[in-house]
Length: 478
Image (cartoon, rainbow, N blue to C red; front, side, top):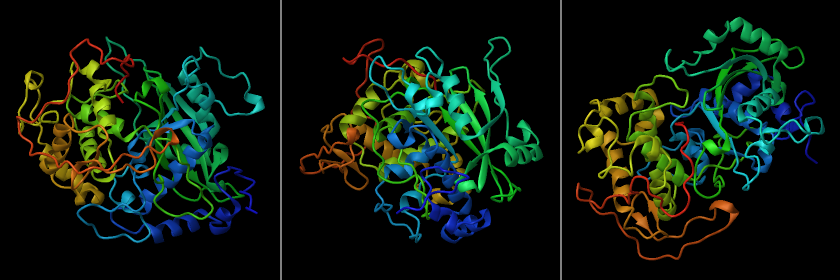
Protein backbone atom coordinates (compact mmCIF):
# COMPACT_ATOMS: atom_id res chain seq x y z
CA UNK A 1 0.00 0.00 0.00
CA UNK A 2 1.39 3.41 -0.96
CA UNK A 3 1.95 5.73 1.94
CA UNK A 4 -0.12 8.89 1.66
CA UNK A 5 1.39 12.32 1.11
CA UNK A 6 1.78 14.95 3.83
CA UNK A 7 -1.52 16.28 5.31
CA UNK A 8 -0.10 19.76 4.79
CA UNK A 9 0.23 19.09 1.06
CA UNK A 10 -2.06 16.27 -0.17
CA UNK A 11 -0.89 16.51 -3.80
CA UNK A 12 -1.23 13.19 -5.63
CA UNK A 13 2.21 13.33 -7.29
CA UNK A 14 3.81 13.08 -3.84
CA UNK A 15 3.55 10.15 -1.47
CA UNK A 16 4.55 9.78 2.18
CA UNK A 17 8.02 8.53 1.34
CA UNK A 18 8.91 12.03 0.08
CA UNK A 19 8.68 13.59 3.53
CA UNK A 20 10.27 10.51 5.10
CA UNK A 21 13.26 11.04 2.82
CA UNK A 22 13.27 14.83 3.21
CA UNK A 23 12.05 16.01 6.62
CA UNK A 24 13.40 19.48 5.87
CA UNK A 25 14.41 21.76 3.01
CA UNK A 26 18.05 21.27 3.98
CA UNK A 27 17.71 17.51 3.53
CA UNK A 28 16.22 17.99 0.05
CA UNK A 29 19.00 20.34 -1.03
CA UNK A 30 21.64 17.95 0.29
CA UNK A 31 20.13 15.15 -1.82
CA UNK A 32 20.11 17.28 -4.96
CA UNK A 33 23.63 18.50 -4.30
CA UNK A 34 24.92 14.90 -4.11
CA UNK A 35 23.30 13.94 -7.42
CA UNK A 36 23.62 17.15 -9.41
CA UNK A 37 27.31 17.89 -8.94
CA UNK A 38 28.41 18.52 -12.53
CA UNK A 39 29.24 21.73 -14.40
CA UNK A 40 26.49 21.02 -16.95
CA UNK A 41 23.89 19.95 -14.42
CA UNK A 42 24.26 21.40 -10.94
CA UNK A 43 22.10 21.72 -7.84
CA UNK A 44 20.57 25.01 -9.01
CA UNK A 45 19.38 23.45 -12.26
CA UNK A 46 18.01 20.36 -10.51
CA UNK A 47 16.20 22.50 -7.95
CA UNK A 48 14.55 24.65 -10.61
CA UNK A 49 13.46 21.54 -12.53
CA UNK A 50 12.00 19.99 -9.38
CA UNK A 51 10.04 23.13 -8.49
CA UNK A 52 8.75 23.55 -12.05
CA UNK A 53 7.71 19.89 -12.13
CA UNK A 54 5.95 20.34 -8.78
CA UNK A 55 4.07 23.39 -10.08
CA UNK A 56 3.14 21.71 -13.38
CA UNK A 57 1.80 18.67 -11.53
CA UNK A 58 -0.62 20.95 -9.64
CA UNK A 59 -2.34 22.21 -12.78
CA UNK A 60 -5.97 21.08 -12.85
CA UNK A 61 -6.18 18.17 -15.27
CA UNK A 62 -2.38 17.74 -15.49
CA UNK A 63 -2.69 14.01 -14.80
CA UNK A 64 -5.24 13.67 -17.63
CA UNK A 65 -3.22 15.25 -20.43
CA UNK A 66 -5.15 18.53 -20.40
CA UNK A 67 -2.05 20.76 -20.71
CA UNK A 68 0.61 20.92 -23.44
CA UNK A 69 4.21 21.81 -22.61
CA UNK A 70 5.94 23.82 -25.33
CA UNK A 71 8.96 25.56 -23.79
CA UNK A 72 12.62 24.55 -23.85
CA UNK A 73 12.01 22.83 -20.51
CA UNK A 74 10.45 20.11 -22.66
CA UNK A 75 13.66 19.32 -24.60
CA UNK A 76 14.86 16.42 -22.39
CA UNK A 77 11.32 15.01 -22.30
CA UNK A 78 11.50 14.55 -26.08
CA UNK A 79 14.49 12.19 -25.85
CA UNK A 80 14.83 8.50 -25.03
CA UNK A 81 16.53 7.80 -21.69
CA UNK A 82 19.17 5.68 -23.43
CA UNK A 83 20.24 8.42 -25.85
CA UNK A 84 23.88 9.52 -25.95
CA UNK A 85 25.48 12.56 -27.60
CA UNK A 86 26.46 11.35 -31.10
CA UNK A 87 30.12 12.40 -30.93
CA UNK A 88 30.66 11.21 -27.38
CA UNK A 89 30.66 13.14 -24.12
CA UNK A 90 31.88 12.31 -20.60
CA UNK A 91 29.17 10.41 -18.74
CA UNK A 92 27.60 12.06 -15.72
CA UNK A 93 26.46 9.15 -13.51
CA UNK A 94 22.91 9.56 -12.26
CA UNK A 95 21.94 12.22 -14.84
CA UNK A 96 20.62 11.27 -18.31
CA UNK A 97 22.58 12.72 -21.23
CA UNK A 98 19.33 14.27 -22.45
CA UNK A 99 19.43 16.58 -19.41
CA UNK A 100 23.18 17.08 -19.22
CA UNK A 101 23.37 18.41 -22.79
CA UNK A 102 20.07 20.27 -23.16
CA UNK A 103 20.23 24.03 -22.83
CA UNK A 104 19.25 25.04 -19.28
CA UNK A 105 15.68 26.36 -19.09
CA UNK A 106 14.26 28.15 -16.07
CA UNK A 107 10.74 28.92 -17.24
CA UNK A 108 7.73 26.88 -18.26
CA UNK A 109 5.28 27.56 -21.13
CA UNK A 110 1.93 25.80 -21.10
CA UNK A 111 -1.35 25.84 -23.00
CA UNK A 112 -4.55 23.79 -22.71
CA UNK A 113 -4.62 20.73 -24.93
CA UNK A 114 -6.67 21.22 -28.13
CA UNK A 115 -10.39 20.57 -27.74
CA UNK A 116 -12.86 19.09 -30.25
CA UNK A 117 -14.46 21.55 -32.71
CA UNK A 118 -17.13 23.67 -31.04
CA UNK A 119 -15.85 23.14 -27.50
CA UNK A 120 -14.48 25.92 -25.29
CA UNK A 121 -10.71 25.44 -25.90
CA UNK A 122 -9.68 26.24 -22.33
CA UNK A 123 -12.64 25.46 -20.11
CA UNK A 124 -11.80 21.96 -18.84
CA UNK A 125 -8.10 22.59 -18.33
CA UNK A 126 -8.56 25.90 -16.55
CA UNK A 127 -11.15 24.71 -14.03
CA UNK A 128 -10.39 22.17 -11.31
CA UNK A 129 -12.86 19.30 -11.35
CA UNK A 130 -14.46 20.07 -7.95
CA UNK A 131 -18.06 20.67 -6.96
CA UNK A 132 -17.41 24.14 -5.57
CA UNK A 133 -16.06 25.27 -8.93
CA UNK A 134 -19.02 24.07 -10.99
CA UNK A 135 -20.19 26.81 -13.29
CA UNK A 136 -17.15 29.06 -12.80
CA UNK A 137 -16.27 29.12 -16.49
CA UNK A 138 -18.41 29.90 -19.48
CA UNK A 139 -17.73 29.63 -23.23
CA UNK A 140 -17.48 33.42 -23.52
CA UNK A 141 -15.03 33.98 -20.70
CA UNK A 142 -11.53 35.20 -21.60
CA UNK A 143 -8.59 32.88 -21.23
CA UNK A 144 -6.81 35.44 -19.06
CA UNK A 145 -9.57 35.19 -16.45
CA UNK A 146 -9.35 31.41 -16.47
CA UNK A 147 -5.55 31.51 -16.26
CA UNK A 148 -5.79 33.69 -13.15
CA UNK A 149 -7.96 30.99 -11.57
CA UNK A 150 -5.34 28.38 -12.38
CA UNK A 151 -2.56 30.44 -10.81
CA UNK A 152 -4.69 31.07 -7.73
CA UNK A 153 -5.02 27.33 -7.24
CA UNK A 154 -1.23 26.88 -7.28
CA UNK A 155 0.19 30.04 -5.71
CA UNK A 156 -1.34 32.80 -3.59
CA UNK A 157 -1.79 35.82 -5.91
CA UNK A 158 0.17 38.96 -5.11
CA UNK A 159 0.56 41.87 -7.49
CA UNK A 160 -1.54 41.72 -10.67
CA UNK A 161 -0.55 43.87 -13.66
CA UNK A 162 -2.40 44.38 -16.94
CA UNK A 163 -0.10 45.46 -19.77
CA UNK A 164 -1.85 47.64 -22.36
CA UNK A 165 0.05 48.46 -25.53
CA UNK A 166 -0.46 52.12 -26.46
CA UNK A 167 0.43 53.30 -30.00
CA UNK A 168 1.18 56.80 -28.69
CA UNK A 169 3.12 55.92 -25.58
CA UNK A 170 4.88 52.93 -27.11
CA UNK A 171 4.80 49.34 -25.90
CA UNK A 172 4.59 48.71 -22.19
CA UNK A 173 7.58 47.04 -20.58
CA UNK A 174 7.01 44.13 -18.19
CA UNK A 175 8.06 44.49 -14.55
CA UNK A 176 11.61 43.52 -13.75
CA UNK A 177 13.03 40.94 -11.35
CA UNK A 178 11.37 40.06 -8.10
CA UNK A 179 13.29 42.79 -6.25
CA UNK A 180 11.51 45.39 -8.42
CA UNK A 181 8.04 43.91 -7.96
CA UNK A 182 8.23 44.10 -4.18
CA UNK A 183 10.89 44.13 -1.54
CA UNK A 184 12.53 40.77 -0.93
CA UNK A 185 11.48 40.96 2.69
CA UNK A 186 7.82 41.32 1.72
CA UNK A 187 8.00 38.41 -0.71
CA UNK A 188 9.58 36.17 1.94
CA UNK A 189 7.30 37.19 4.80
CA UNK A 190 4.07 37.06 2.83
CA UNK A 191 5.05 33.84 1.09
CA UNK A 192 5.86 32.04 4.32
CA UNK A 193 2.62 33.24 5.91
CA UNK A 194 0.04 33.00 3.12
CA UNK A 195 1.61 31.01 0.27
CA UNK A 196 0.10 27.77 -0.93
CA UNK A 197 2.07 24.65 0.09
CA UNK A 198 4.36 22.84 -2.32
CA UNK A 199 6.83 19.95 -2.19
CA UNK A 200 5.07 18.31 0.73
CA UNK A 201 5.06 21.53 2.75
CA UNK A 202 8.75 22.35 2.24
CA UNK A 203 7.92 25.48 0.20
CA UNK A 204 5.14 28.03 -0.10
CA UNK A 205 4.13 29.47 -3.45
CA UNK A 206 3.02 33.03 -4.21
CA UNK A 207 2.79 34.73 -7.59
CA UNK A 208 2.86 38.08 -9.34
CA UNK A 209 0.77 37.97 -12.51
CA UNK A 210 1.03 39.97 -15.71
CA UNK A 211 -1.78 39.88 -18.28
CA UNK A 212 -0.42 40.65 -21.74
CA UNK A 213 -2.35 42.38 -24.55
CA UNK A 214 -2.69 39.06 -26.41
CA UNK A 215 -4.58 37.48 -23.47
CA UNK A 216 -1.48 35.55 -22.40
CA UNK A 217 -0.79 35.45 -18.65
CA UNK A 218 2.76 35.42 -17.34
CA UNK A 219 3.31 34.54 -13.71
CA UNK A 220 6.42 35.09 -11.63
CA UNK A 221 6.02 32.36 -9.03
CA UNK A 222 8.02 32.72 -5.82
CA UNK A 223 8.90 29.49 -4.01
CA UNK A 224 9.67 30.35 -0.38
CA UNK A 225 11.34 27.48 1.53
CA UNK A 226 9.88 27.04 5.03
CA UNK A 227 10.32 24.83 8.06
CA UNK A 228 7.33 22.45 8.07
CA UNK A 229 4.99 22.95 10.98
CA UNK A 230 6.39 26.31 12.06
CA UNK A 231 6.22 28.26 8.81
CA UNK A 232 9.58 29.89 9.53
CA UNK A 233 11.58 30.83 6.44
CA UNK A 234 14.20 28.21 5.63
CA UNK A 235 16.13 29.72 2.71
CA UNK A 236 16.15 32.45 0.07
CA UNK A 237 13.08 32.50 -2.22
CA UNK A 238 13.42 31.11 -5.74
CA UNK A 239 11.73 32.86 -8.67
CA UNK A 240 10.21 30.80 -11.49
CA UNK A 241 8.57 32.15 -14.63
CA UNK A 242 5.42 30.46 -15.91
CA UNK A 243 3.51 31.48 -19.05
CA UNK A 244 -0.02 30.30 -19.83
CA UNK A 245 -1.31 30.72 -23.39
CA UNK A 246 -4.74 29.94 -24.81
CA UNK A 247 -4.88 26.78 -26.93
CA UNK A 248 -5.53 28.75 -30.11
CA UNK A 249 -2.31 30.75 -29.54
CA UNK A 250 -0.11 27.63 -29.77
CA UNK A 251 -0.45 26.43 -33.36
CA UNK A 252 0.71 22.98 -34.40
CA UNK A 253 -0.41 20.30 -36.82
CA UNK A 254 -1.99 17.11 -35.55
CA UNK A 255 -2.33 16.01 -31.94
CA UNK A 256 0.06 16.61 -29.04
CA UNK A 257 3.01 14.25 -28.74
CA UNK A 258 3.61 11.81 -25.91
CA UNK A 259 6.80 12.51 -23.93
CA UNK A 260 9.68 10.03 -24.23
CA UNK A 261 11.43 11.11 -21.04
CA UNK A 262 10.99 13.23 -17.92
CA UNK A 263 11.31 16.98 -17.41
CA UNK A 264 13.19 16.14 -14.19
CA UNK A 265 16.76 14.87 -14.54
CA UNK A 266 17.27 13.53 -11.00
CA UNK A 267 15.63 10.77 -8.99
CA UNK A 268 13.67 12.17 -6.03
CA UNK A 269 12.11 9.50 -3.76
CA UNK A 270 8.35 9.91 -3.35
CA UNK A 271 8.04 12.43 -6.19
CA UNK A 272 6.46 11.58 -9.55
CA UNK A 273 7.11 14.18 -12.22
CA UNK A 274 4.14 14.91 -14.51
CA UNK A 275 4.36 13.55 -18.05
CA UNK A 276 2.66 16.35 -19.90
CA UNK A 277 1.90 16.09 -23.63
CA UNK A 278 4.23 18.11 -25.87
CA UNK A 279 3.80 20.13 -29.01
CA UNK A 280 5.29 17.83 -31.69
CA UNK A 281 9.08 17.87 -32.22
CA UNK A 282 8.61 18.88 -35.84
CA UNK A 283 6.49 21.91 -34.94
CA UNK A 284 8.96 23.04 -32.30
CA UNK A 285 11.77 22.76 -34.86
CA UNK A 286 9.79 24.61 -37.55
CA UNK A 287 8.75 27.43 -35.18
CA UNK A 288 12.30 28.03 -34.00
CA UNK A 289 13.72 27.86 -37.54
CA UNK A 290 11.18 30.45 -38.69
CA UNK A 291 11.72 32.77 -35.73
CA UNK A 292 15.48 32.73 -36.23
CA UNK A 293 15.34 33.90 -39.84
CA UNK A 294 13.59 37.23 -39.14
CA UNK A 295 13.88 40.17 -36.75
CA UNK A 296 13.22 39.04 -33.18
CA UNK A 297 9.83 39.77 -31.69
CA UNK A 298 8.28 39.17 -28.31
CA UNK A 299 4.74 38.25 -27.29
CA UNK A 300 5.00 40.78 -24.46
CA UNK A 301 4.76 43.78 -26.80
CA UNK A 302 8.05 45.05 -25.37
CA UNK A 303 11.26 46.18 -27.07
CA UNK A 304 13.71 43.36 -27.63
CA UNK A 305 17.10 42.59 -29.15
CA UNK A 306 18.45 39.65 -31.17
CA UNK A 307 20.09 38.27 -28.03
CA UNK A 308 17.18 36.15 -26.89
CA UNK A 309 17.15 34.27 -30.20
CA UNK A 310 20.71 32.90 -29.95
CA UNK A 311 19.48 30.23 -27.56
CA UNK A 312 17.03 28.91 -30.14
CA UNK A 313 19.88 27.94 -32.45
CA UNK A 314 21.24 25.60 -29.78
CA UNK A 315 17.76 24.15 -29.29
CA UNK A 316 17.48 23.50 -33.04
CA UNK A 317 20.81 21.71 -33.08
CA UNK A 318 19.82 19.65 -30.02
CA UNK A 319 16.68 18.49 -31.86
CA UNK A 320 18.80 17.38 -34.85
CA UNK A 321 20.97 15.27 -32.55
CA UNK A 322 18.45 13.84 -30.12
CA UNK A 323 15.00 13.47 -31.70
CA UNK A 324 13.81 11.32 -34.66
CA UNK A 325 12.31 14.16 -36.69
CA UNK A 326 9.85 12.79 -39.25
CA UNK A 327 10.24 14.18 -42.79
CA UNK A 328 6.53 14.34 -43.62
CA UNK A 329 5.49 16.06 -40.42
CA UNK A 330 8.45 18.47 -40.55
CA UNK A 331 7.71 19.35 -44.18
CA UNK A 332 4.10 20.18 -43.27
CA UNK A 333 5.11 22.11 -40.14
CA UNK A 334 7.54 24.25 -42.13
CA UNK A 335 5.35 24.78 -45.20
CA UNK A 336 2.27 25.73 -43.18
CA UNK A 337 4.04 27.60 -40.38
CA UNK A 338 1.92 30.38 -38.94
CA UNK A 339 4.94 32.69 -38.50
CA UNK A 340 5.23 33.32 -42.26
CA UNK A 341 2.09 35.48 -42.41
CA UNK A 342 3.29 38.03 -39.86
CA UNK A 343 6.80 37.98 -41.36
CA UNK A 344 5.61 38.61 -44.94
CA UNK A 345 7.48 35.48 -46.02
CA UNK A 346 6.38 32.43 -47.98
CA UNK A 347 9.05 29.99 -46.81
CA UNK A 348 12.47 29.51 -45.30
CA UNK A 349 15.53 30.90 -47.11
CA UNK A 350 17.68 28.54 -49.18
CA UNK A 351 20.38 28.02 -48.11
CA UNK A 352 19.11 28.52 -44.60
CA UNK A 353 20.40 31.59 -42.79
CA UNK A 354 19.59 33.36 -39.54
CA UNK A 355 18.70 37.02 -39.11
CA UNK A 356 21.68 39.34 -39.42
CA UNK A 357 24.19 36.70 -40.55
CA UNK A 358 26.06 38.48 -43.34
CA UNK A 359 28.36 35.49 -43.93
CA UNK A 360 25.64 33.75 -45.99
CA UNK A 361 23.72 34.82 -49.12
CA UNK A 362 20.69 37.03 -48.55
CA UNK A 363 17.68 38.19 -50.57
CA UNK A 364 15.31 41.15 -50.74
CA UNK A 365 14.23 40.49 -47.15
CA UNK A 366 17.75 40.86 -45.77
CA UNK A 367 18.81 44.19 -47.35
CA UNK A 368 18.14 46.24 -44.22
CA UNK A 369 19.26 43.66 -41.68
CA UNK A 370 21.95 44.65 -39.18
CA UNK A 371 25.28 42.82 -39.25
CA UNK A 372 25.17 40.47 -36.25
CA UNK A 373 28.25 38.54 -35.15
CA UNK A 374 26.52 35.24 -34.48
CA UNK A 375 29.77 33.31 -34.10
CA UNK A 376 30.94 35.48 -31.21
CA UNK A 377 27.50 35.55 -29.61
CA UNK A 378 27.28 31.76 -29.67
CA UNK A 379 30.75 31.42 -28.13
CA UNK A 380 29.68 33.80 -25.37
CA UNK A 381 26.60 31.69 -24.65
CA UNK A 382 28.73 28.53 -24.59
CA UNK A 383 31.10 30.15 -22.12
CA UNK A 384 28.15 30.95 -19.84
CA UNK A 385 26.57 27.48 -19.98
CA UNK A 386 28.89 24.46 -19.68
CA UNK A 387 26.15 22.22 -21.15
CA UNK A 388 26.56 24.03 -24.50
CA UNK A 389 30.31 23.51 -24.81
CA UNK A 390 29.79 20.10 -26.43
CA UNK A 391 28.02 21.82 -29.33
CA UNK A 392 29.95 22.82 -32.47
CA UNK A 393 30.66 26.48 -33.24
CA UNK A 394 28.00 28.62 -34.91
CA UNK A 395 28.85 27.64 -38.51
CA UNK A 396 28.86 23.92 -37.62
CA UNK A 397 25.35 24.16 -36.19
CA UNK A 398 24.09 26.14 -39.18
CA UNK A 399 25.61 23.65 -41.64
CA UNK A 400 23.80 20.75 -39.96
CA UNK A 401 20.46 22.59 -39.91
CA UNK A 402 20.94 23.68 -43.52
CA UNK A 403 21.66 20.11 -44.64
CA UNK A 404 18.49 18.87 -42.94
CA UNK A 405 16.29 21.60 -44.46
CA UNK A 406 17.88 21.61 -47.93
CA UNK A 407 17.37 17.86 -48.39
CA UNK A 408 13.90 17.78 -46.84
CA UNK A 409 11.82 18.52 -50.02
CA UNK A 410 13.26 15.54 -51.90
CA UNK A 411 13.07 13.16 -48.93
CA UNK A 412 10.45 10.44 -48.58
CA UNK A 413 7.78 11.51 -46.07
CA UNK A 414 8.30 8.35 -44.03
CA UNK A 415 11.99 9.06 -43.41
CA UNK A 416 13.42 10.17 -40.08
CA UNK A 417 16.50 12.25 -39.38
CA UNK A 418 19.63 10.60 -37.95
CA UNK A 419 22.57 12.80 -36.84
CA UNK A 420 25.16 10.63 -38.63
CA UNK A 421 23.19 9.25 -41.60
CA UNK A 422 20.87 12.12 -42.44
CA UNK A 423 17.39 11.17 -43.64
CA UNK A 424 16.86 7.41 -43.31
CA UNK A 425 13.90 5.10 -43.76
CA UNK A 426 14.43 3.45 -40.37
CA UNK A 427 11.35 2.81 -38.25
CA UNK A 428 10.27 5.51 -35.83
CA UNK A 429 9.92 4.61 -32.12
CA UNK A 430 6.48 3.80 -30.75
CA UNK A 431 5.73 7.23 -29.32
CA UNK A 432 3.95 8.92 -32.17
CA UNK A 433 0.97 11.19 -31.55
CA UNK A 434 -2.46 9.93 -30.50
CA UNK A 435 -0.80 7.15 -28.51
CA UNK A 436 -0.63 4.97 -31.62
CA UNK A 437 2.32 3.00 -32.91
CA UNK A 438 2.98 3.83 -36.54
CA UNK A 439 6.13 1.99 -37.65
CA UNK A 440 7.75 2.79 -40.99
CA UNK A 441 9.04 0.09 -43.29
CA UNK A 442 12.80 0.01 -43.29
CA UNK A 443 14.54 0.82 -46.55
CA UNK A 444 18.04 1.84 -47.53
CA UNK A 445 19.16 5.14 -46.01
CA UNK A 446 19.30 8.30 -48.06
CA UNK A 447 22.39 10.24 -47.03
CA UNK A 448 22.23 14.03 -47.21
CA UNK A 449 23.77 15.78 -50.18
CA UNK A 450 26.38 18.48 -49.87
CA UNK A 451 24.73 21.82 -49.30
CA UNK A 452 25.31 24.75 -51.62
CA UNK A 453 23.46 27.74 -52.92
CA UNK A 454 22.07 25.44 -55.63
CA UNK A 455 20.48 23.04 -53.13
CA UNK A 456 16.78 22.41 -53.82
CA UNK A 457 14.65 25.12 -52.22
CA UNK A 458 12.18 24.46 -49.44
CA UNK A 459 8.69 23.99 -50.83
CA UNK A 460 7.17 27.42 -50.63
CA UNK A 461 3.60 28.60 -50.41
CA UNK A 462 2.73 31.47 -52.81
CA UNK A 463 1.62 34.57 -50.89
CA UNK A 464 -2.09 34.51 -50.16
CA UNK A 465 -2.55 30.93 -51.33
CA UNK A 466 -3.70 27.91 -49.36
CA UNK A 467 -1.86 24.58 -49.25
CA UNK A 468 -5.19 22.77 -49.44
CA UNK A 469 -6.38 22.51 -45.89
CA UNK A 470 -7.63 25.58 -44.09
CA UNK A 471 -4.78 27.38 -42.32
CA UNK A 472 -4.93 28.27 -38.63
CA UNK A 473 -5.11 31.99 -37.90
CA UNK A 474 -1.80 33.74 -37.26
CA UNK A 475 -0.90 33.78 -33.59
CA UNK A 476 1.17 36.38 -31.75
CA UNK A 477 4.91 35.79 -31.45
CA UNK A 478 5.95 33.69 -28.53
